Image (cartoon, rainbow, N blue to C red):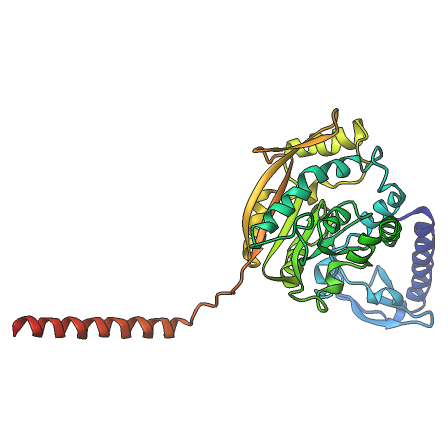
Length: 370
């Protein structure tokens, strides 16, 4: 809805336009013609609108016998939502989400603050990422099991997950659209010279680095991110593009259920205050079934989906078979993209095989006759 100042400004312009139009209509009434029909004892009428004209105030008028419509010239650039052309450069970043996290940028490393659940979640998500990545390598260095791997941490925030992955030996690129988050992350990693060399932070969205990082990363991590994007399909497509063949995508997010609304929003945000109000939007939550469908349709094969439960009283997470609240998913990028052969070639191949079989059978029969 419009604010008061905008309403008063717009309203005054429209009223002024109608006043001028009424005066102009009266002055030109002798020249106006209409074929409007007014049936007797009927309230409706059908005006025949004459072509529009522009007056000296650059106001466009539509003329009829008893009504004048005005449309300000500066409004001609407005497009209705359903007629707006699609743009391939559309971002997946929600600006309202950016404002929410901007206000909390200085609290990332407060382990007792609003991000305490994310600190505690590392007890599950770090081993989940590490163990699944180690399945793809034959050998690894003790103490640095992820050495030699390049990981992209999307929506890294203050680096809560980026740093543990760097300590495991990986070369990690952390990206986030909130500049204050990146400043916090860079400041924190500067205290550890080893991490300072292994971790790189960038203020950007995933779409902005796709062209420069095609098939660059062994793994992409999107932990507690997909429930904040505005275009999940595009987001997954970008993840696919930056992954190497047979690369891993790791996602942790919130299921879209009545229970997740009751506990994830009503209880966590409005009653207990575990997370700030407005952090989550239930409509953006995604079920494991829908997520798997999107992943599979974009060349990513789902390997694991497992539930996660948070105990707000103890402050700890644990794995669960129940995925009705939080869950983690691991998917692999296909090494080869299968392209089915055209139908005519497939039929031709089948025909040739049948002919070869027939000739073989004929030869066998002749040998038996001998």
